[in-house]
Image (cartoon, rainbow, N blue to C red):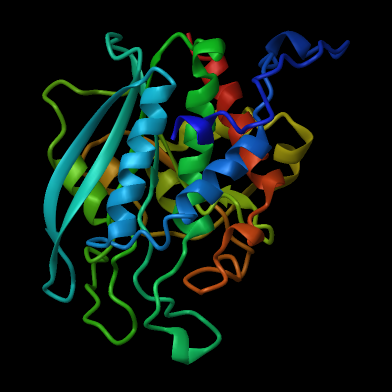
Length: 316
């Protein structure tokens, strides 16, 4: 574990100052996409992280240990969940807290599990195979781990809770019994939202999902706009890098059933979903066997990571 964490080439280097009139606003750290890519690969090296599998348990331990290695306080919310098919399985939501003593906090979240069925694969013979989930799971966690690696240098004025949700992607495939209200999805975040510590009131949340798809961009997701329009406006205004400006588009997207829905509706934390799409749907690798590290865009990881760094830098 420690050896893996030492392989990264970036060291949170300081960005050179510019003569731009807005230079005083710009965060003086550079998000390291190479490091984030290593985090994607490390998660996928365990295999598909489907609930109940050995890869699932091994990756959970890896994520928790990685956050601890960067000095964060890690807690694990263990629970037994029941899927659409009646099966029960042990799950864990992982929270890594930066400056846990601070009352004023923000949440950055992603799911870390893999979908058990590649039910959107072009080859129907592969529909019951699990998804490696490099983009649909590992990419969001990778961005969070890289932020955690640099957060003590960034030193935001608020506490930050990095939350990794389990069992987001256990929603029923086309051959299963699908819930009309979408409650067969986002099982870990629903449990988390229903069992928050008393008095836990973060300022806002940002959910990362499928942030590494090379064929995608980010726009205003419907529920994000409904529940957290101010947060969304702030986040989009922090997309200052060239990569981010080209990918964070100021236009309406679609409504997505994702972990931000229970965060907003149950936990009442105004939360924005940063979720990649093509304008016609999700990435071509979505719920397929091609969702592998080789198809992850470092440019996208950097755009999202740098934007979040900027947002945290501006907290006061």
